[in-house]
Length: 364
Image (cartoon, rainbow, N blue to C red; front, side, top):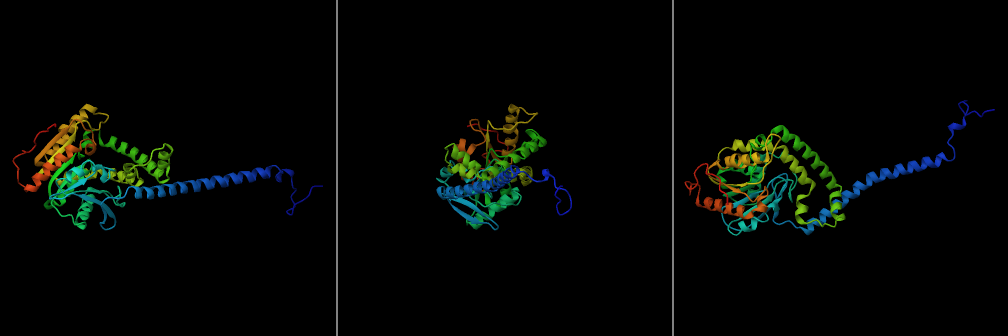
């Protein structure tokens, strides 16, 4: 006769786990628990590893200059040298103040010169607002005013920094006496060197890569990789390879086209002294533009157009430099700054007839 449970239904032998099934279930639950702990604990340990490493790196690579409160955030400013006008260095995309390491000491021999970190780069705080050219220019102006760095200014902008200094000169014309554009971005480069659709597709792919890399950095994987390879993190790696820098690069790229339109709207530079340094080897290319044609467009059209923004504009083509002109040809950058600085120091009209409008390119 079968035993009956309390509900009156017969109990089969299959409903009761055997003695060997119970240890297997306990083992599975234990394995699941350990896997859950690993999933939760390992990222936390990696984040702690990254935080401690960054804290130690900040001690090893102390910030030169100072942090200046510009309202909702602080920007890093580093000034050296003496003499007026003051030279302001605006770095390219994702680049901290250190991109000017080979330029600033030489300029400081004849002028006061300041480099700085835009929001989200180097030692500066992060800014979550859209990185429009107008916002960058306004923050730079507030930084200089708060830090008591009076004009007049000579502005030097590399890459996308060229957009920013052009907008700054438009917004604060009485404070600017000259510009140097260092292989500057052009508002027409996307359309002329491959097309907007292709560029946007490439940037979407780059943004996904940056987001993945930023996550890996925050979890300490980038730092761990360096440690496993026996490669200590130096100052440049510390400054460039930060998740905030990657996210800022994504923000600035998202605003690239609109920043170019802001620069276009800024219009002519009038009679301001202007030197345009152009890489003779760097240019993008697209499905319908060969590298050779892209270089021609970059040098002879896009960069030449920038030189024509001023009646005193001049283009200098550097055939031995890629896009990283501040590092590859710092002497050319220093020479251009000195030339514009000297003209700016003499006054707004001094030497206005020396460089006719649309002066052709010169190759040193």
